[in-house]
Structures are given as structure tokens and as C-alpha cells.
Image (cartoon, rainbow, N blue to C red; front, side, top):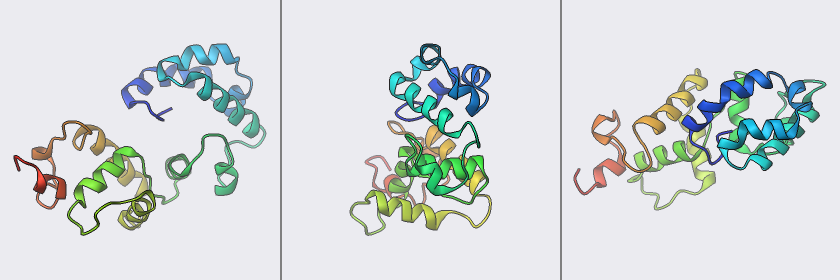
Length: 175
């Protein structure tokens, strides 16, 4: 639901979605038009509805798979959704990497000597930064931090615990 959609928008429809489709079996039996009516505020609703229904149909008999290969074979499950599902849903110690986490790492490590990070570098960095325990708490903290402090357009650098060593903060015109 969060693909190209801000969390406040998802938050507004999530409860209704879960009440209507509490299981993958319920998604498998979903009426496409009724599902679209619920998820329309998210945008990409045709695309999302098809993916939700297919995931429901493919997992209704055994539930959402915990196996990485089986999970990644589902529609719209890329590296972020895979790791987020395994971390948040199944308690595995996995890093996550979305645009918010990427922004945090690129800002903090701006003066690290690497001119530009690519996606592989971010995943490698996320793996290195992940604590041995409590990956779930760490990842949730990153997501919250990216949403509330290290925002895209107007970060609250003066409130940030990392400002003393953050490359982005050190390079600001007013910093």
C-alpha cells in the first residue's frame, strides 16, 4: 500500500481494508470493484487490486509464505516488500530500504568519500547498519525518523540527534 503513497493516506484506508479483507482467503474472494472502492485513495488502484487479488489467490491455501523464494515470486514483491514482510511479519533480522531510509543514509553519509551511492550500496549499507538484534525496532525507527525528522523537503536538522556527524547538515548553507 505504501508504494508511491504517503503513510497518512494509507493510514486513512488501512482499517477499512483490514476489516473487509482480514485474511488472504478474503482477498482471494474479493470483488474487484469493491476492493477498488476501498483502495482508490491510494492511487494505482487497478494495479493494486489485481496484485492483492492474485496474492490472495496464490496464498489462500497455505497463507503468506515465509520462504524468501516463494514470497519474492508473488506480484509486486521486490526487495523492500520482501525484507519488510520477513522482518515485520515473521520476525527475521532483515534490513529495509525504501526512499525514506535511502534519504537518511545518503544524507548522514554524504561526506563518506563516496561520491554517489547506487541501490546496491544502500542495501549493503543497510545490512551493515542493522543491529544484531531488534531489527524490527530499528527499521521502524528509521521509517519514523524519515517521516518526522529527516523529511524530503524540509528536514528538521536542528532537532536531529545525528546533526553533529551528518554530511547533509554539515554541508547546508545555513549550517
